[in-house]
Length: 189
Image (cartoon, rainbow, N blue to C red; front, top):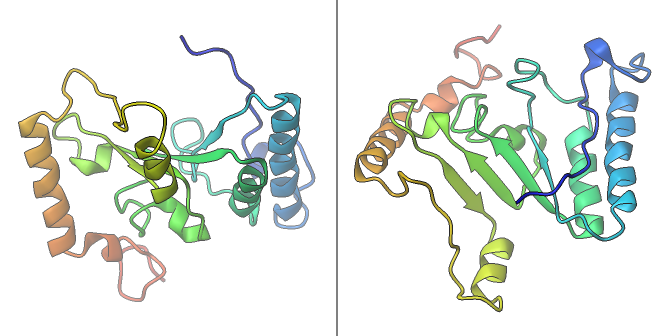
């Protein structure tokens, strides 16, 4: 059902394919250039770019090089592509921000979140869409509804757990507590 699509390299300065002698800024831009090339090679068939703000499963919480996320966001804007952040591992306060992309002031069109939404107690995920995406669906030629779901879609127990977890995160100010850049928080110097 899903056709093959282009993949680009993941910026990882430890095993970089490019020159990292400038603190990885140059390699970040070269990896972003791979996105530009892939979009151009798609010849109008590309619709979106999906990325992890911090590489999670494949690399173990690796930060992107300086300027990389801003560059891919700009490339997506310039080509009219949706920017989709996979925040399944990094979202919901795990990096000291509600979503990891906030560290780089990048605003994706869609954020996919899970794990932290229910603290892993029950299966629960979320798709968060920008006004631009919501309006396109609502005003589109179809039903105006975002038809999706899984077997456990809107399961009352999962939703109740998610609400309880998010209330607890907010009550204990856990996102702020996870921000190691703030004095007096876990991981700060």
